[in-house]
Length: 219
Image 1 (tube, rainbow, N blue to C red):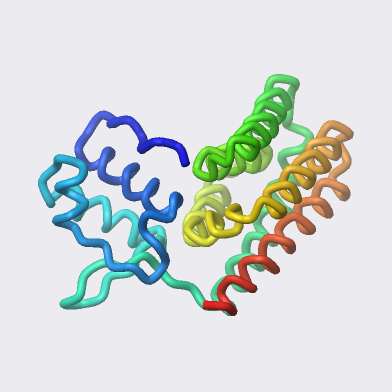
Image 2: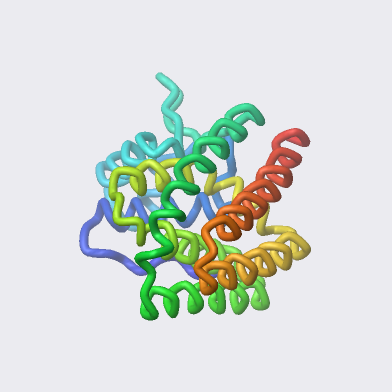
């Protein structure tokens, strides 16, 4: 697992990025209570920036506030996951079709670099680094659509399942499947074939949903 993120410019940013890392790395698991005092002590911060960071994560759907009990890492049900992935399918297909004509050689190189970074992180067993590179890969494609409002919604949907995506990457077999899917998506992008890009994205997403649905079912 990669190390904690370096301290950004402000205390709240440091708290926010550190809490994100704790969720992605599995240090904070779905359904687990977030002890603000403990987090503040770990990060050598006051409780105030930790509380503000938790409010941001609550808006993103990554944590849930329960009156008189505090904040908990959001725990999803299978139906929640299906709804999120159905919404992603709609938004990401539109973004991918709009993005493809706008991708230049520099953009393609960024996408290919993210694919290589995913492979290196998978080889090293660094799940947090692989999640970061995976996100960078997908967003390098979709963000080229030039539609910031759609991308804001897509990011929120991704954020709401990030803790579960970390569980998905705990399986070496699924990490290999994901790398193979990235290679196919990249090839379709290079060929400027929108139907194939959408089909590969759909298949990649469907596999993740199948695996995550199994994890939720077991829970």
